Length: 558
Image (cartoon, rainbow, N blue to C red):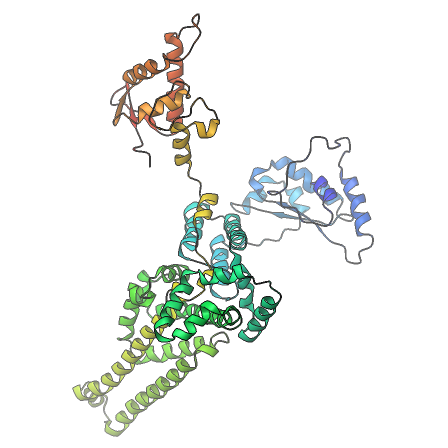
């Protein structure tokens, strides 16, 4: 600990990223608290506000109690000259602190307790911040996004791995995509975007290679083909006029992508709002991250047309009562009047105003009907309210309003939650390749083991095992490789003696000195060792059904 403070004066060191120290380092210096005290006085003499020395003990349960007691006692003795703050990570309960340390040691500490956020809460916040709340960051397609979810929820809830995956995707995107220079333009409005691209084009920062790459994008090709039938002159100019493409069309298309992303986020929030209107719908309710995944995976028809969730919500909206309509309209207005959505929701706000007026008229007509035809007795009023004519009149107006709201929500969600692949130049904003992430962060040990056993030359880098056929048996290969190839020819139950005989017949063909023939004990020892290796790798296991047999656990080369 003292060594870390002495070595790293102006930087924070992550223990997981710190490289191993050189063996030639001078170990004659004894690091003591007095040395740390002198170092702190030297570095804090010029500071008006002295900094604390922060020590993080990540896993309290892993430390010996006696060591911690001595450490806290020493820190207490130097509390006037060394302002040490210890952050202790406790995985179980705070009671372990009192059970591990003596009362005298605890008396030296000023304990303050706080809780870290659950990793799932952090993960959801990162997903919303990067992929939903902003339109200026790199977005993930369905496969990379699903990889993030699966790797986090199905493995170890590791925040570090999620962060590494995001960084790796950014590195790959900017390194392997020449059109990544267009991504920072999303931070600008359309006018500034045009000015920036004009400047880059005139300074030749955007070259003919970039222009050709834009024209070769599948989404841009589809866009030009769609223009060929309606606006052939514009389609031709996009293919021939480089200046018009860069200065006019690219800013327009990127602006449309930003507007699409804003509407996409609004559509997901609207689904969340509709789900909250029906408490009985909780069994089918989906989280925001899963709605986002399904919306990304939607085909050309769009998420609203394909999702069973939207269909059920629209069906429930048609049956909502007057009180539910009033609450729904208030929450929808709150959503649509948010600063991020006001520019794209003028039509939606006008619709809300219209529905509010109709709802107010409906409530007023209900009150007027009671006042005009009301009776003095409670029984008479109840009979009147239950009359078919009265119920039909109010029910028809309420049903019309509910059906209209449901149909509008269905249409609006269909407009907002279209597939991103329909937008020209989406390749410049969306990262859709998951192969590199899967290869780098999702290990496949079985495939690696099987490759090593069937084709050992790839790992041994030898010429003696060179073989084009993976099932051919070569005596130069390791014993476990030979036994594994014989294993592939066996059934569910493997007779150990037959397996040994086949193995012995192969290794007998080895090139050996004449005075050193293969002995039976050597063959048995090599066979037993190879069987133990295959059992350790999970290919076989002993069985009590037949003591001279083992059971095969894997099939084919999958």
